[in-house]
Length: 204
Image (cartoon, rainbow, N blue to C red; front, side, top):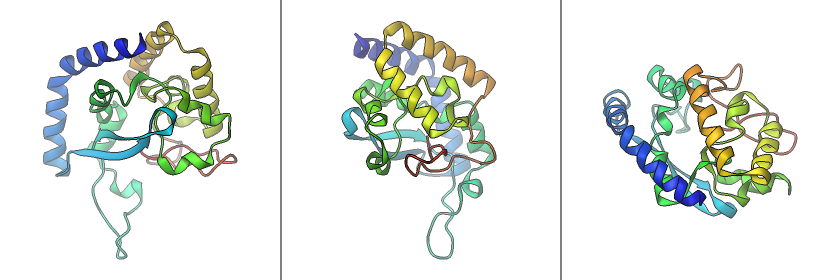
């Protein structure tokens, strides 16, 4: 039932947002160059890896040793605009259609975080990750890792189609009001370092 819901509504959203997607892709090409899409391996259902797609929001600036410069240097004004209104997330509708993502579920984090989770936190991988989730409409990146994981596990234990619809509606409100995009005091978000961390995810 959830897979059918995801597939049908992802197709509807993809068609509805196609003019915005095409215009955004053109703007990314002009302002940031190629590649247009940011592709990164993320853990899906039961931790199985897949490639997550987003519109690119950063420039490829390196230091003298060949390492990427800090996010606040590489994140452009245009990239900040895309993140503010979640336009960078629109390519993930293709991930939903392919079956890698659900419309609603815990956000897929980074592969290197998998060994850092507690047994309880690992339950977030018992369902497919989502474009949006219970944690995203209850603080998004402005809350601690521990709070985020508790919300993710709560969703896993209480998921229903009606709850998914509620989260999608709340997500629209969050996007309109641009709430919880960044960790306070940071241009983007810091990495998760384990149980004691109160940071939030990078590229999330």
